Image 1 (cartoon, rainbow, N blue to C red):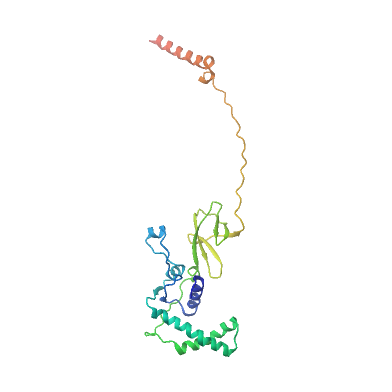
Image 2 (tube, rainbow, N blue to C red):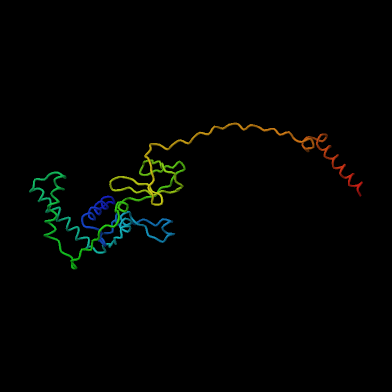
Length: 247
């Protein structure tokens, strides 16, 4: 199954029916294995790039085993060829010509098909485990966005306003299989609202500054030669004269 959302949806249905597997055996399609170059952050942390499906299974603790031979991929391709031949004939015999009736028919056909063509495992032990956590937070599309100064982010062509007070510079986004979106910071859900446009900044009125006039003292040098400096020189001369008399 190609595509991240269909693969996650199929895997979640499998888990709901059988439990969490120890490992999965899949091919090297880009849905299941990332071919992207590592980012600077990934290089600094020493980790390899991962696809969304890889990241989800790692969080669930499921090991991924990739096929390294054409024979392994041939097994699933032969199954598809069998279903495309046998299943179509069965649908024709039942007079089924729409998707809803075909999906209903699969519920009774697949158990019969599996009993006839499947092989039991060598150990005979069921290695599936019960879920100990909510898989919704793992089987989803996760991304990260920078929070603007007006507490807005852009995601998938839409704008979102964060309503909670937060000091976050970046927030984590989870887009679930049902289309719902969670925006988180440090694992905590933030309250948000979808908006059509970014809020306009408040206009600040430029008020002219009032000029404050300070009257200088009479002996201030800026008052001039006669009024300021003369008085200052006279005081200095008096001090010098008095000091000379004391001597």
